Length: 212
Image 1 (tube, rainbow, N blue to C red):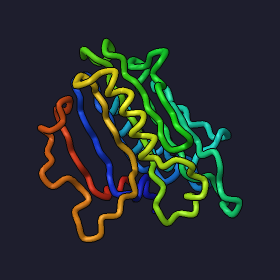
Image 2: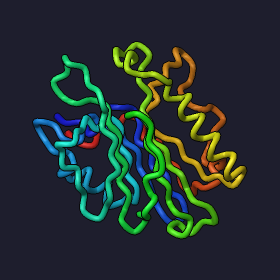
Image 3: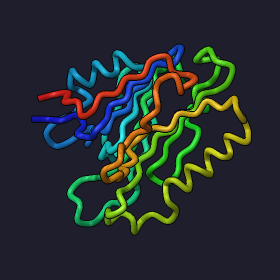
């Protein structure tokens, strides 16, 4: 039995002009299969313009090419000596028609990757920034490798963009935040799609099993 992602979430969001999808993939390529060849994942690429993955478990030796898309990849720099495979990793696939010379806008260490969609590509007045991140769990042994917390670096990056654009900033933050909320909800209880100025459609699927 293969799970394309075990997480907890698949988010699909439609913004005027394009659709994107975020998945925790738990390894794009493993010894048992190349998930990029699975029909379920091919369908994801056929029905989305931007596909974002956390936990790709990838390295420079993996071929992650998908026809019609440009892949922006961030491999984990350091892996524990006891690990038998790479861990972590982020990947953002952007359909070719949305790619510009400066689509890859920002990356930090091995846990933040941000792309920029040019305004003229998506028929908006201002560029759109989509930032993908992976926050290491607090009890993870990898905390020893982190010099500055992911949230601190995200805040610094966002603040710079906010100063530049003000209220006109189009910024989407997504990823695997590994939050722990005890008995409290792990979502904003009064939130809804109308709070997203750009979003026309927003769906949330919890723990979807894409392949059995």
